[in-house]
Image 1 (cartoon, rainbow, N blue to C red):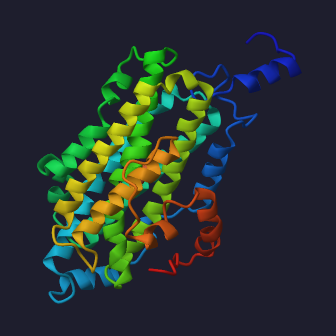
Image 2: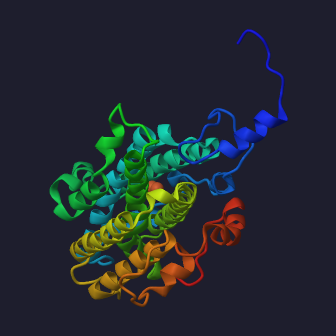
Length: 350
Ligand SMILES: [Fe+2]
Ligand SMILES: [Fe+2]
């Protein structure tokens, strides 16, 4: 720039009004004025809850895993299969975020949170690697499981449906069709992958803690679930903001399509849960996981303004009380202090 441009209130306020999650006309490299407060708050809450897997001791887990008397074969299977799912799921989410989503988000404050989220996905993958290494599991077996187990592959494939369209160099938001595609991709990842596909595994992994088994592994999954609950809530806020800015995208046909998609996702998650725990584990029966998935799917439908489809009772109230279904802000208000003082999170009802 050859000459300086005088500051103008008028230009500034126009810029404020133009700020949008997608299709904004503003300057993506300057943060102020922050319009999407949900993104800024999520970014700050995430920083306040920073953690690293290597801070958590795996000593007890190693002893229990080596012992022939502590864990059953079914319980070992759950740990390995859940890791098999997550090792690739977090990478798929991160790749979608960085390579497909990020460049089309025009809100600088949303971009700030996306950067934080991408780093957290790396921390999660690090965490699975740390658990695999600590328990001396077969790395190749775990990290390539998605290629061999249909119930994992199908979930990954289901959410990745629209990624190639968005990765296409010619893809641009700003048309009815491309904006619907982009919105659907956000729903696929934030609502289905991070909001439905993670939850049988979370419930199973956290149930270990209730019997004082694999405490280091379970503690890492608690932190991961806390992060994921934030990711999902942030995604839902973005989705609802796009709907508010461009209500024309939310057609009857599109709503039906999304509602059916969430039901199909619930079915895929039920098949996965059945393979994960064919006989139930740790006092939780296999059928209750089906109800749990349906309950979670209903909550996700409602969160984006659609009607519940299953209307079942939550069989695991201890999950919703503690973790995902409380609004992220309240969730963090009660947890931040414990973490910041360096102690492990205490989950009273576990
Ligand atoms: Fe993650
Ligand atoms: Fe995530």
